[in-house]
Length: 189
Length: 445
Image 1: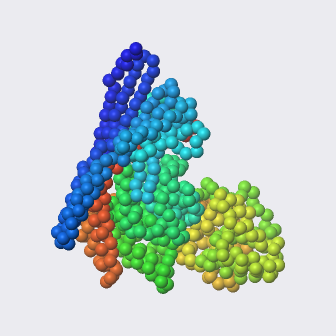
Image 2: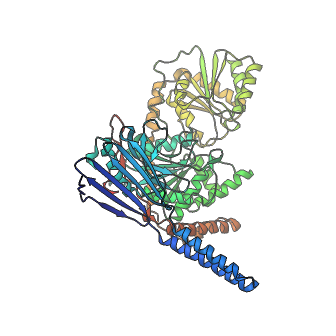
Image 3: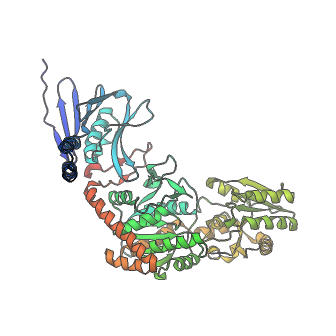
């Protein structure tokens, strides 16, 4: 029976939209470095959900009063607004993680709102370099962390669905560089 | 002279690398020289084909190719407020202190300057061309220019003629306009190591073969000169709609062995074409400055040019022969130039040009303009609106409305995407190491 010795190097960075957790399990046999970014429910989502539900209910109520239609419409609208609230409050993506096993490779994991999980494993010798890229869209510019993978034309994004801020990406990038021995001058950081 | 503070400048224009031209080269060389002086320069332009996103050029010059599609003549589609989010993001993340727009015919430049003024940044505008007053296109463009320049901190023109033209078109007070001429990269444009023999005189023409550049004048001038001087040969480089006319002229007068057509000459090959000639002929009908004759003079060629726009201000009288844009007058000017040729010394001309024009000088003068711009007082929205009202009876009110909506849109953006959520980019220092690896100070990110 193997005992896992949990080294207490858990760190946590939080901002309005995302929460970053770093689990660093070091045991005698191998090192597993896990980084998780969780999506937090923002207040504006709750507000919009409740507002739209309220609007819908009040419209249906006034309609049923004015036009003397059956109470069925009101019931249907209540059901619809309950569904809307549930839909708004459910996040499309719950969590994205990267698990770095420096001997084997890197596992990218996306956990969706309905419990579906998508995994992707990249062997360590296929990773050429992890890069921090600035992506420009017509309305904004953000940082993204990607891997240059041997044999693939395009960069592999580490976080496919979410856009964490750069201060959460940097420790992950440093850990990836250390695992793949990419940069020689890491001592500057 | 005390220590000058270092600025962080955003250059905005639709025209930049990989396009080649006067404005593009100006922005590039000016940025390189400003980087050497210690300032930080970032360039913003639209995406060229697949070239989109962030790119780094020599010296650490950062270029944002924003993925807005160009719609006509390399200009971005003007949406008034569409570029506000990305402009705001770039200004905050690069910690810009000053915005410098180039070229009146660039929609991205006008929009970026408008947004920068709304957000309270100081703004400098450089005009590179002369424009008319009479036709419908010019009238509308001048109105747009009036709007942009109503609230600019300082403006720069490339010649005194251009300053007069800009001041008249935009109604800007002349005290706000500085004249800083363009320059030439004398290290690239060197004369031929050995002097060419003067048995056969070679006249070089390199320009876009369009109406504006006087291609029709060439059609009249070339056969006449060839008739008068049997030992004169022409080399014509460049392409355009008027190329057909010149080819026809060649056929008509049987000048195939005396007029050589090179087609479009890439910028890197221009010097090698220039050094194969004795005289450079420029027949433009309008020119704010004309860098082409600077390049020719730097290569040791004697220039014959039309006396239009800012051309007389460019070269000293002993290096250029000017003529009216009339074929007979130009033929006489070429005759005078041919007689002046034996006295010319290409190496001496090149050394003189080195002293007269340099991009470092342009950068230092531009730095003075930036210092002056940053010392302008900060004005709130109401004070700025009063300047727009003076633009015209209807136009003034329209401009005010546009600016008010921009202001409201900006405040909405500040709520939706607060400035503290936009992360500032650390200054990346590119080391001079073999593999070009970047190291950056990420410890304070």
